[in-house]
Length: 115
Image 1 (cartoon, helix red, strand yellow):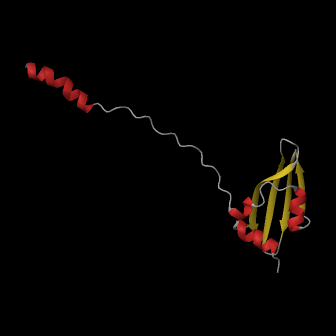
Image 2: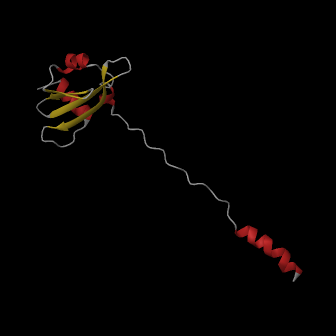
Image 3: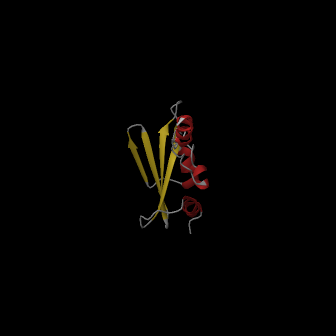
């Protein structure tokens, strides 16, 4: 009987598992395709110098959307004022002329080299 009283706490201790806190997944940082990275940070004047006059220009609040169109694709560049007030590209979206998502590098290349 004494052995079972001594063995019982050891047996229970072997069954208890240490509590492990689950890891909280950190939100993934959006990965910007290499070609779009070349546009991030540009000013409106730099975009116009690169692609020519935008087909569409929309002001909404303090933001600006410039749209450039080619035969095969459409590129939307979203600009927001920085701390010094300068408007800069913060996001780029591309799609085929049909509206289907398109690779940003391919669209930028198509706009750079119209045929």
